[in-house]
Length: 74
Image (tube, rainbow, N blue to C red; front, side, top):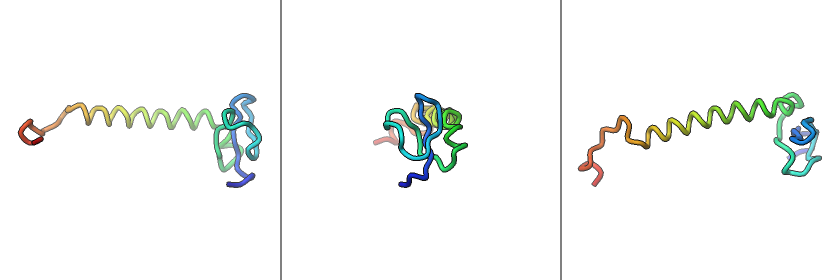
């Protein structure tokens, strides 16, 4: 870890170079100041991807499209 990493303060909504704020008030680390400024955008994009992956996972586990019969599971 380095003090040259950027963080986003969720209270002040400002980027910070290094771990200046308490851990509960910061997101990161980010490589650049601009990435820190885009923290909420990055979070939303990741959550969208993870939500889609969860939907796909749940669909797979629900038996939809499954060709395994009860006898095959023994």
